[in-house]
Amino acid sequence: MKRQLLLSSIAATTLILTAAPAMAEDVEVGIAGAIKGDVRVSTQDKPKEARVARKQRFFWGDVIRTKKKSQLHILLLDRSTFTIGSRTQMVIDRFVYDPNEGRSFFARIFEGAFRFMSGRNDANSGGTIETPTGTIGIRGTALDGIVGEEAMEIAEEEAAIPEDTDHDEDTATLIVLRGPGEATEGDLTVGEIDVTAAGETVELNQPGFAAYIPREGSPPIGPFRLSFAGLGRIQDQLQPSVTRANSGNGLVKALAGIAVIAGAALILSDDDDPVEPNSTADQPSPKDSAGRPPID
Amino acid sequence: MNSVSCKRTAQAIAIGCAIALISPLSAETFEELDLLSDASADEETGIQLAQEQAARGELLEALATLERVLATEPKAHDARLLQAYYLCMVDDIRGGKVALSKLKKKRYEEEDLNVVYAQCGVEQEG
Image (cartoon, rainbow over all chains, first blue to last red):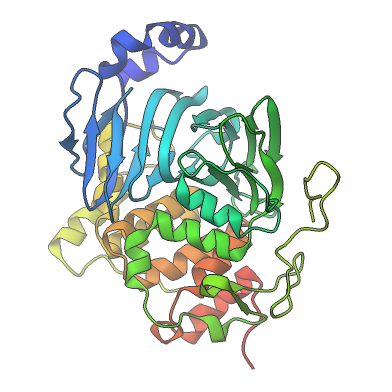
């Protein structure tokens, strides 16, 4: 902890950036807050994977990987969290935190599903998540992301994604802002995300808005409002054990204004997004000439 | 929604007491993270911790706590309902509704469901 604080000044941050490779194993970033299934960690110096136990410390540069039907919840020092679903691989390359100054980090997601939620001092904190196709700049945010085939399959069902999109099933990246929104309770910073790829940036500033990068070298498509079905599929990837615990019908009949769409996902009505049964209310308005749907 | 007691088992008592040591304003330490992990390894104490965090306005931390609970206790029905409730509190209405849609009504008291429906802007039956 003392070491973390010592390293956390702006000047030190600059030093850290240049010194990271040599110091990586010395800097703790957080712990394994909860584990389901088989989660592994390796380092550059110790490439043989070792099984992760709950409360195990993670360090700069650790390569973290979940196996099939597994899940990991990482608690970072500022109480920000990463949740990663099954078959996900990530690295937290850098994490710097000072309770008085805020937090910054740089992480990479190679494949799989992830959720990041900001912790304390989020107004002064930022972070960057890199995927194979783009980067996500975050502030005071809860976001979900998914990289790989599942991202492609979700995107293919979204009306905002042109049918002739050239996807790469290994690197396709889907990012959705989860909140907090402007109507949030509590003293939370409203979430914002910048999704950048191929020199273009899409800003997500409302919960449920998404951006999709179909392959390396492609600019992000969006923002668009991710469908309930898409949100549900990401949720299933992030909490596979909860998904397996579900059986039979949920609260479908108890919720008003619902319609069942492909994949048995649900559409529920709300004021800003009225839905009629079997309607396409989750689909955006007609696209503009650039193939990008206008918001709402 | 009713608060959950943490007195069922000796372990829960120990963890529950540890929760009280997690001050909202103290400097963060790895030992404190361990306590958070311990508290959310048990359904009851995890829900209690989440409720305390939410009461302090730490809604994202409360949601994170519930995620940890659900990682190990995926059938924790109260945690799942609370998760939907807190999602709607942070204005992730659609996310809250998706979470709600996966629950089974018979597991819950109508009064609790109505609170969550109201928070999420869901019209009630009847």
